[in-house]
Length: 380
Ligand code: SOE
Image (cartoon, rainbow, N blue to C red; front, side, top):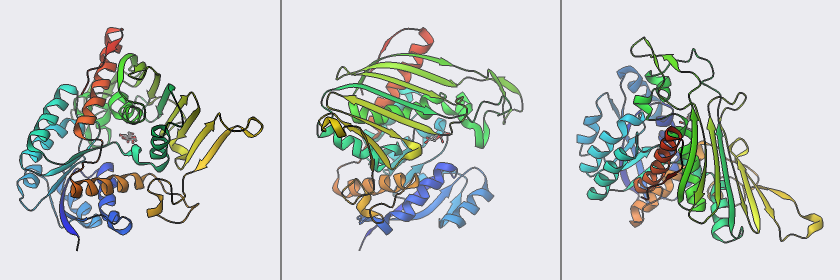
């Protein structure tokens, strides 16, 4: 008999759907010790919350997140609301003893993230931040190859996250669909929204980032605000590029923008080591490119590894070799690992503290761009 884990989801947008799907799917594919029960969904608009509850099988709905926290029947709180609401909800949930999964980035800035880590660690509740790309099988395989020492000493880590959806000055800021463009709701632009993914994966693969030198730009300086109806200044970074030094003395090179016409969600990374290199591309997420210098020279070249075999991360849980999986599966893997960790008392990562480390890098990047100088990154 599996133990029941009663889930309260706060936020019914894009991420609310990915997390709900993960809770619904996990027991079909993974032999985890818990069965998540979709108890309540919370969102601002009652009719949307009701429809969401009907569609995803939540037993009830509410428009007041406090009710989710106060409900003794709820074991786990899942936070999928805009970034400016993460802290208040997470701290209240921790005080109420709930386990927590929170969407990325953890907070508006590092100061706020510190208060969250403090509350979570004091309460001793299980916690995880949803940097889902770690759990693309090919990205997890890259981590395994690095940890096995196959790349040898690492010299370079470069990553990009490119989109093009905010080029038009007619795209507004604020509100349900475009809160990511409102600095009050998002905290920052591409740095917190997109580069945070790249930074999380990079530090997981390659260790601590010690110092950064960045530049940012806001190409469209004023946008209509959905809530006020007025044209207001834009406070987010539309594009951000930074170079950095890792603790292992390798060099990093990161770029993110929402102004790369033709790219919808092009997250790529390449890692160059003494013995081998690895490259990955979200648009072809089930493949890992691998170059091994020890191959015989006449057949040496970049291999395109189709990450679908049963001995590759997570893949024995899905179909048969050769049949690939996609984006939504990363959230299923995340919930599976979280539930395993909950049972064993060995928390899955990235924890709130790991996400604080990412937040420190984001803060250093933004402050470097503002002051036009190198910044040292605080350690979590
Ligand atoms: C923004 O467009 C966004 O949805 C991010 O918020 C997600 O974290 C990223 O995975 C895809 O792009």
